[in-house]
Length: 204
Image (tube, rainbow, N blue to C red; front, side, top):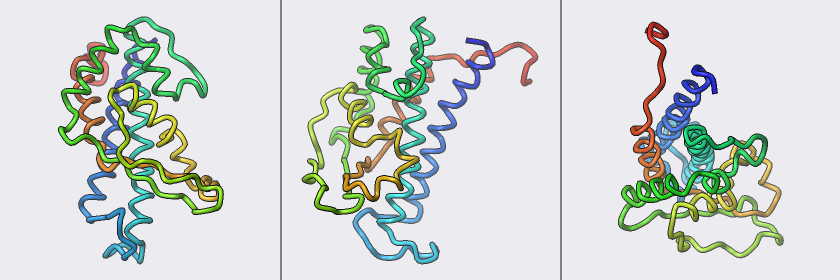
C-alpha cells in the first residue's frame, strides 16, 4: 500500500468515527428520544422517534465504516490480503481473517472498555406488516467481539444503513445501539497503538 493511501486510510478511520460521535452528541444535546412521538423543539415539527431513528442511522453507518477500515488496516499491517467488493464490508469475516494473536488483542481491548451493565439494543419495526417477524430480544447474550461483529453485520446491518429508507416496505426490524461509546473507545485504543505514517516535509 502506498504511503498516501495508508495515510488516507488511517485518517478516514478517525474521521468516520468522529462523524458518528458528532451525530450522537447532537442526539444528546437536543434530548432526542427513541420512546416519544412528541415533537422536538426547534426542529420544524420533526418527531422524537423519527429523528432518533434517522440520526442513529447516520451514526451507525459511519461507525460501521470506521470499524471496517480499522480491521482492514490491521490486515494490512499483518501482511494479510484485504478483501474487496461486498465481502470487504463484513466485519465478522474481516475479523476472522486477522491473525489469532491480534484477535486476542482486540478481544482484550474490547473487554477493557465494555461497561459493567453491557450494551442496550433497540429495535423498531421499520413498517409493521404481516411479514414482520416476532420482536427480537432487546438484550441478547453477546459474549465476545466476534459476536458483536456478527450482530452489527446481520441484525443491525450497518452497511445497509445508507439505504435504510428502502427497508420501510420490507416488514423488517431495524436495529440500533443505545450507545456507541464502547466501539468508539475500542477504535481509539487500537489506533493509539498504530503510528500515523508521515514523510518528512510533506504536509508540514
